[in-house]
Length: 345
Image (tube, rainbow, N blue to C red; front, side):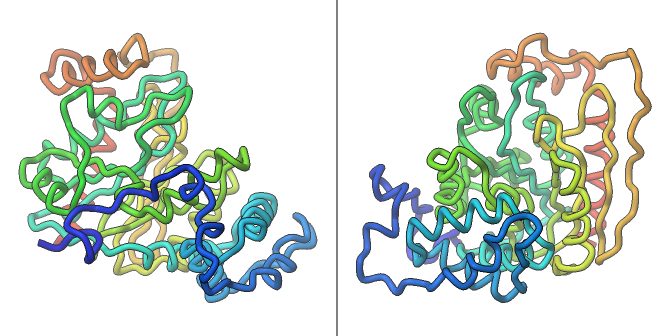
């Protein structure tokens, strides 16, 4: 059985030890350092003066960042410069090329459906997080469903916490993931297990206080060897155009399709009260899959509280048919099943 990391039977955890986890560059004085100053000079000139990198330069820079070959000072400068400038499509593509080369790919599961990828890096603050419901409904239809994300996020209820309440343990290897698929269960893998170097880049938010480009990359990650359907969300309007251009001009079509929608508190599950617009990207072409619902005063039935235990109990009731699945979520499931089946054909 192929595992995510070829040198270990189990997935390697992220670096242990606080200093090593937060400052890996400082721990190895013999590392071949990457000269980042020329890149910082171009991207660090502010919103109006900065120039974007080519795809190849972006790949080289981000690969060096993931490998710990950029000094802490330069790394902070790069992350903040990109935060201010914003990623171009070419930069996003180059970063993604490096990101997907930083870990061993997952084997494609057998069956009638291509896998569906659900990134979960936001959780819920106001509405109950129904991402686990989406994943469980897809898996019940026989669709291999992989959720990847964070275990916890202060002030939010994560998908991981709800899945644990439902009795679904996280995956520790590709064998665990394939076992879940074979049993028609969704698999959840923490980003620390899937791609430790990306998890480290995400963790820098605790130091810098702001998100960085990696928070966008993990939402469009495609870790399977074969094609998959990616469910992708955005929160800021400018990312609708950037991600749309990425999937039409820069994403390799053989990697599969993508559904792009405005996130429900950042999650890629349809808003239970009002279906969002969903754009479908297939073979470099963009089409409108779902029109946004008109405003309405009629609200779907959802959990009264948003804590993990209450949400898990409500989701279990929905799976048993005791409470109705919100229509936008049910429609999202149907679209995913159809496209996942078509991708496998």
